[in-house]
Image 1: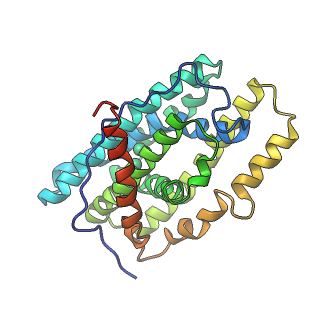
Image 2 (image 1 turned 45 degrees about the vertical axis):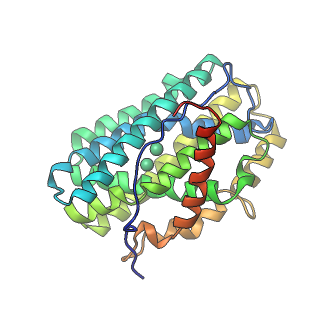
Length: 280
Ligand SMILES: [Fe+2]
Ligand SMILES: [Fe+2]
């Protein structure tokens, strides 16, 4: 099975001003502590993670001669930069609610400092490719099924769907670059195993911290419903398993998961938001 990045794909960051309420409702996701904190915990990872992705792609930018690929890389950097800014704003709201954002993000920063000091640029790019696959398959689920944000407040639903849309648009940029400058599949698979471990650990730690601050560690009902929502039949993570595993194939390419149409359909959603008067 082969696939390549679609010829007519363009990547450009959207400047949408989201009206995140301040203060944020504590359980903005349908009043559900677990679901809310699951997304909150991911948001905490984005600013540092996306900075790392940008740096690891930018390092190889000069090696790219194809003007179209240069354009796509520029779009990638612009989009990730915007995401970071929006998630910093989001994370400020979490800090204001009394969660220890610094303590939760410090391990990520430490790990990135370590990678920058000890990993080769190719290996850092491989880590980026792995994390981009993770975000791409979650983004696909978020775009495909509205139910993941059932009950969420509208600005949050928009932030997450906007992020999912742009993650889909640029899902193969780091991958295509990696194949050009390295192509070592074994390194990609190692990077994926490590990234999976750290991603799950960081998200779990974030959820645990916020549930503890809320005095909900013993709220068995919330944990049970949350775990079922994530890992149960038709759960958020359960549904990602097969797309996740495809990454380990020798001929994997992100656009083998063809969600180009879905992506185009979602784009209209954001044209509409702009027309409704949100700042372009
Ligand atoms: Fe992003
Ligand atoms: Fe991304």
